Image 1 (cartoon, rainbow, N blue to C red):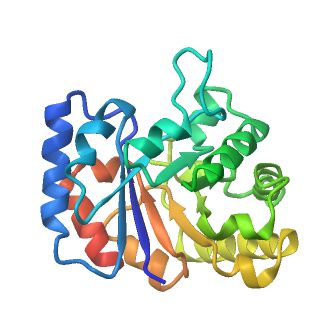
Image 2: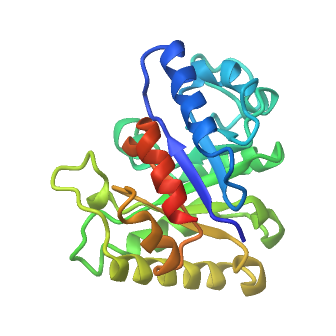
Length: 250
């Protein structure tokens, strides 16, 4: 299975011209890389323009609405994203949970609608406290709620991101998870999935790491901690660093 490396640009950059320049630099920098799947998730306004520039990159969205369309001011539906060439959609990112009040129930609804349109959900889950063993149980609760009502056959497109809140670069005192932290988490998540669904199916679900990823630690998360890829935030806005992360990981 090829590793998947996802760049989450969040609410950056400020202009379309900057987004196109960054996209071009990344595309040119990875043109000879064949053994990885690279996904860029820019802000909504830039999706249409970047669609025509894909080639060796895939396009993802940072969120979506849980309905196909209708009287929902300010929302973007999975059907619209599909038409723009989007293949992946991030769901449940910690910043969406924190700033937009997104709940596990809302995420579950969005996930089901995304699958209806044959898009691939990137489901983010994570614990808040590095030292608390009780807190890591939150991962189990998030998974169970987000995947409620799904059948094993629905999971072939699913990507699960372990995104410990305490490790995110924008969190005060945030520090990347150690290899031991990461190994424990991926083992824990894989066991939860196996209990919820058929084990032979869940073995095919890609589990990736997110949280203060850089070119120094990216290889370890994949080669030593056995993650299937990476979700890269801040570092994906620096083309040179993001390319180094990808090359180190593969």
